Image (cartoon, rainbow, N blue to C red; front, side):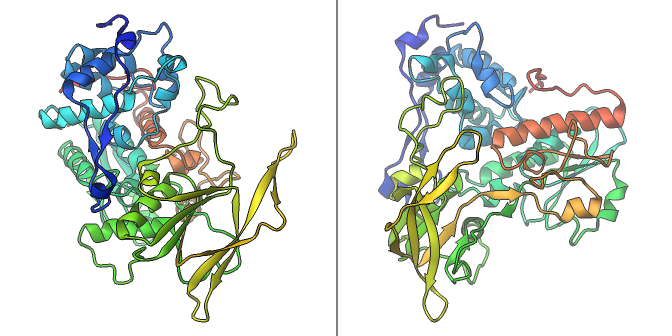
Length: 484
């Protein structure tokens, strides 16, 4: 390593944010990059561990100590080569990944872990700024054709890997722009859509064909897929979870994804006559995950009168829980930038009723405090606390409750077997229909962006093996080093 003992000399440095009052006035990204000289120091904090647990913490198997060292050495182009050998889209993961690698960083046992995610983002952004990111079309074509259904991170990763293998790849997206949930499920203040667009330009130049407004099984028959030698299903887990609660049909109870999607489409010039707005309203976001956080940030930018967040689970500890020691993913409180912008957070709250007026318009929520009874060997039991009912004023309730699994349209029409959770069954990413493969949330259920990219890469390798009998595509932990 270039700096023996660098972790002793330098403290962790992260990106800072614009002031709340400034950033909530628009929908732009608001992070302030770490200066280049400080990034060199951050790279030097990597300890050259005997066993780098960050490798196992990262679902992509990123070669983290290697690119950290190159950043310390100021060999940025080499750092980019190493990073891209295992990760197709560091510009996405560097913004959106919760960084399980950092949670398993050995330095994290005694000090703040290495700022791996920020280093990753800095490498790829410099690559684009310096013009190092260039299309890499294959030198030869195999004559094989592949359809990729879905253009989220799993679909895009599968498409790029299969194209690199020389296959002719067409990506079908049912929405009007490429990106899947990256496009319309993630607010602009976390991922400006130009970041997606510049990557799509590269992928198109490499030879990938993109077709939007094509909903396979709806306005594009599954029979038309017979023209392809193989198919990769990467449609995600998009069945939204609801609540079996009285008054759920009230006007003003809205699924989070509808709320977020509408805002992004309006931001990019589409007309949504009945757009759901939080302006001047008492907003309650039900669900304490990342989507709930995104709804909070968007509501604040709309100019909500108040924003309240409900979570049915207990409040996590501020520090790492003893039940999740290093190097496991920690159970601990996460406070996002959206929470910091203004939000009343409440735990162990269950919604009992959505209250509406005689016009069916939402006016309030009735809740009850709860506790969880834990019995060894049994599922946790939800216990309501007597006398804890409360009415909350509410004009807009946003359901950020996650997803129950993939939609059934494709599985039913293509004859794909599903498991108990409705995920598409697959062995080595291959479904019961031999030439059809699946990856990402459609196969494993709702998960992280870094898992989606990993799944897409691994599925592409299996498809290539199926089509050609052998494959040179990398598998996890064994990256290829593309020439730039």
